Image 1 (cartoon, one colour):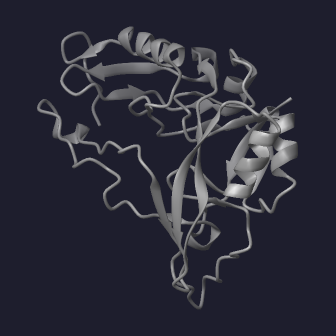
Image 2 (cartoon, rainbow, N blue to C red):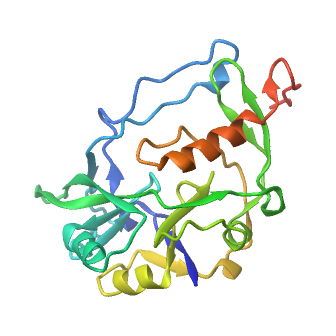
Length: 241
C-alpha cells in the first residue's frame, strides 16, 4: 500500500523555518513577462531555524525526530536516516542540515529528506493539465485541480520506498515498509494518508526546475512532458490573469 505523507506546518510552531539566506539564486525576471520572475534554489546543505516562542505560539518540541518546514521538505534526525539505511529503503537521499533552536543551540544532527524515487508525471484524469510554457524563461502554467489521491492511484511506480509524482514535488509518497520504520520514531508532525482519503483538488499548483538529484530517466520523462506543452506567446494565447 502507498501512503501520502502529509506535513503539519499550518502554524509557525508546527515546524522549522527555512533560513533562506544563501540558498536561492537572485530573483530572475522573464524578458517577456515580468510576472514570470521566480527564484531558483541552490541545492546544497540546508539551514533551518526555530522561531522564538510567544504568548500565542508554544515552544517547539525539541525532542521530535522529524520536523516539517514551509518549504515542503522534511527534516529528520540522523538516527532516522540510519534506520532507513539499515532497512535498505530506497528512493531517498540525506541532505545535511543545520538547525538553530531558539534557545541558542545549533545542531548538525539533522538532515533534509531528498526523494528521488519516481512515480511518473500525473495524467489529465488526475487533473494535471499543463496549459503552456513560456518561450523566454520556461515557466509553466498548470490548470487548477490536481487530485493527489488519483495521481497516486495511477502512478507508474519505479519500486522505490519513497517517491514523488510530478509536478507534486512537495507531496512525498511512501510504502508500508517506509511508514513502519518512520513510526518507530517521534514523528508527531507527519500524517500518513491513504490515497483514497486525499481526493480534494489542489489549486494554484505549478512546478519547478527538476532537482539535480533526480534519476536521468525521471528527468527525461519530465522534460519530454514539458516539450509537448503549447509555447507562449507564439503557439498559445496566454489567458488573462
